[in-house]
Image (cartoon, rainbow, N blue to C red; front, side):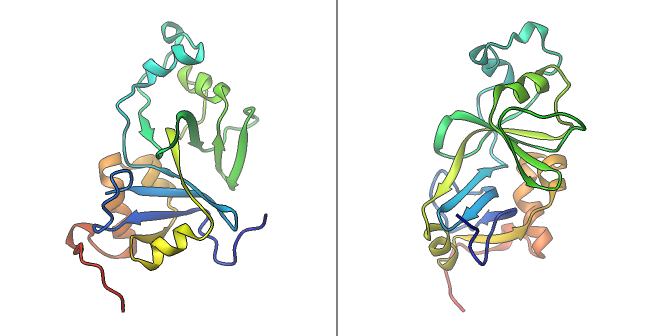
Length: 190
């Protein structure tokens, strides 16, 4: 179950204008895992209509005792939209039940305990809560890349954690040296 030779884990995908799939149009996706078994990522620039205070009672967390109700919820993708995923930085000496380390200071947690800590202002300093995820079967993402549906960009935590959601796609494009708004939706191959 090793990573492919050209793994895109810990990269970001920028959707190109010709990508018309309503789930992914105008999206920026952080790739959590890219292996021979497939790819898993989270859309990091599309906010969800559900508010943080609305999900707390479903998780048996009382919003009345919460000190942080302003957390934005994101649409992570069309797969398992009822499940929550928290992309976050670490907190010294803090471990949550279902955390996996993605990079030196970046984790993905799926357990309720991190949500409870975020609600009580004792969670990670930087976090992104997403409902659902984006998934690709083996070879599917590579085909989409060959069809010019996506561009790849090295991960930059500042884009996800410090730039407003509506500006993240443009910020990632700028990191690659172009203005996303000036790209044609015509597909071409060099």
